[in-house]
Image (cartoon, rainbow, N blue to C red; front, top):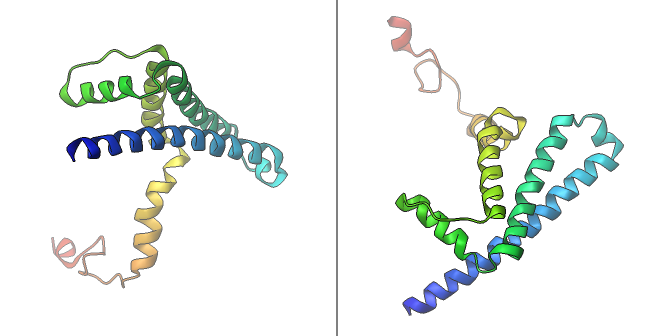
Amino acid sequence: SDNAAALIFYYLALVSGVAAFILGIFGTAGLLFKRLSDEDLRSYTDPIDYFNLVGILFIFLTGLLFWIIEDRSFTTARSFVQGLIIFQPAAAGALMTANVVLSALFLAYMPFTRMMHYVAKYFTYHKVRWDDEPNKPGSGISTTSATAIAA
């Protein structure tokens, strides 16, 4: 039963990882193609938007190439992640290293781009618009509560 659960998890991780790489490549390439071919989109797409999409595309491509060329079972990737968790570095091939470095650079770069809107939108639109509570003094929503005014 433990072996069955481990085997199911193993194959789910394998299938979902490969599917993520393939779908990510098609999605990112599709967005690039749409922005390049649609004149309405092209007119307001900045060069930085193309840079961002190409960067994301390279992350997915290096991941897929890593799986195809270096590690069909994700054994190296599992060892690498385990090494991160237990603070014992594990060896990685060139493509996995490229994928990890590109992913880390992207995660460090993303907060300074317009791509953060998908996170910020939840905290602004959903909370502000959908909660729609009146902003009365002292209600907890107001930035200037009665205690702050008294102080």
